[in-house]
Amino acid sequence: MTTTATPPVLTAVGLRKAYGSGTAAVHAVAGIDVDLMPGEILAIMGASGSGKTTLLHLLAGLIRPDSGSIRLEGVDVAVASDARITALRRERIGVVFQAYNLMPTMSVLDNVALPLLLAGSRRSQARTVAAERLAAVGMESFAKRRPPLLSGGEQQRVAIARALVSNPQVVLADEPTGNLDRKNVLAVCELLRQVAAADGRAVAVVTHEPMVAAYADRIVVLADGRVSDQFQRSEVGSVEQLATRCFHAVDGIA
Ligand SMILES: Nc1ncnc2c1ncn2[C@@H]1O[C@H](COP(=O)(O)OP(=O)(O)OP(=O)(O)O)[C@@H](O)[C@H]1O
Image 1 (cartoon, rainbow, N blue to C red):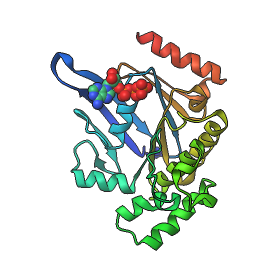
Image 2 (tube, rainbow, N blue to C red):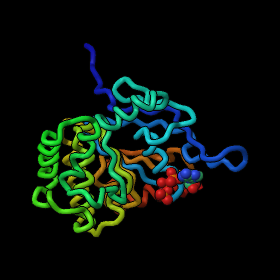
Image 3 (cartoon, helix red, strand yellow):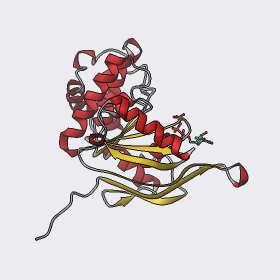
Image 4 (cartoon, helix red, strand yellow):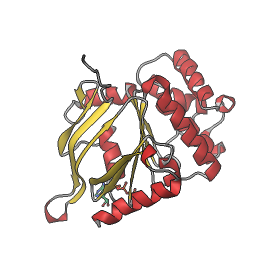
């Protein structure tokens, strides 16, 4: 009898990225293997400067690694052409930034539709899909407003709708709850959980907050550009125990 293990959506092996060169080089990511499984939320934790954002940007194809591979749907993002990466980022990868990165002069609806318009969709079609995604994050009644008139939590929900507009297989979020109060943190976490559950999407979220990591299925802890610990959420009980384990992993390396 053969067993067919579910393949990861994304597999990164031997990732390295340094900023600068020679003795001044900062080895932000210094040899990391990580994969993202369908339907899973992976939390990336670690002290400030441990390489979390650099890792996320590598996975998103926003920066290139010095070495290593990142395979997504048969494409090695590490060495693919700029045009191929741009197409992958438009169609298969959704990125959510801490600062939302919404266009202040465009309506909420057009912000969400923008990736589809850039990919060549007709305006009416892009707006129809954008309206569906806004409804999925509970923001349909805000469609005509401009982003500066929304609260931080509302803007982040719009940013998540935009990241989902092209139905990506991978959603990568960098501190998506960084500017939010507790109520909105929980709302964004619930939303990320729905995102992962729908269509077997893989979600990776960089966070400092144990409360956010508690929503993940798996936690990877970075220290000095390497994985210092990784474990399933089910291995720890409370949020406090999770925080203790993450901080011990960091202390163990230091
Ligand atoms: N563009 C850059 N040029 C030079 N050094 C950089 C650059 N970006 C990041 N670094 C350095 O690389 C290391 C890792 O940075 P990174 O932002 O990935 O860490 P982080 O874990 O996300 O930190 P934080 O939690 O504070 O956001 C840090 O020492 C940082 O100073």
